Length: 264
Ligand code: PGA
Image 1 (cartoon, rainbow, N blue to C red):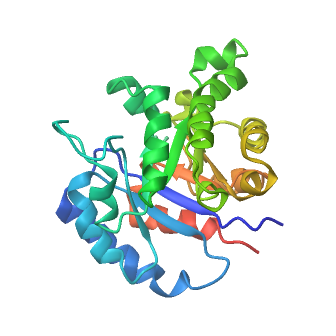
Image 2: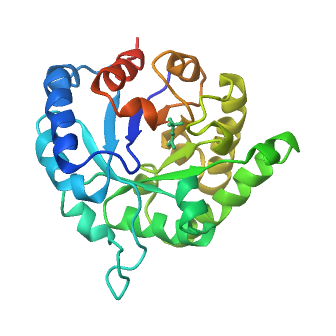
């Protein structure tokens, strides 16, 4: 029996205008308004494009659904055209921020070092980072998965360790294991393979921060999660929820993901 509250986080990527986001939010808020009070109901979050964050935070205010951004800059302010700082997100009642998603690593050259710096800044700003890690298909086929994941997390853990951030704050950290070959492909990891990697991530967390933090940190699986397969992942001891792309875009499937994630 785990004390960690499950987290189902939708990652909308570059989908939904503000109007579309608000229509989703109003429909979802009506469904979950009562149910999130139940102790077994998972925490729900929607990580949306910047343009929808303000409206979503307002629309979700009474529903218990949290709002997340999909990236942020590590500087507090400055001449970084097109970027958004942590304080600009927390001011909007944004709770989560996805960091190091594989699409950002690939298309926006987000490095492990930048993800590490951003993780520290996000926690210090009161945000909860969802730090994404994952291997390519070639990494997996050539047996490099564990090494790649450790290589991505090591700079993050080192930076957090050196930051002086208190254990209680570090415990808020969320890590998402998303094998790149499983994202948006319909080809998901087996639950056992996901548990292998996620268990190793918890062991690594333990090594850096000790047992208390390692037992509190939530670790998600992501990559073609759907209402039909989420229960398999949640049946594993170290998997605390999911980061969901495609299946988070419709209210019905997002609600079904939440339903499937209720505790006993
Ligand atoms: P997917 O995306 O659920 O559509 O595979 C997951 C993600 O990229 O976070």
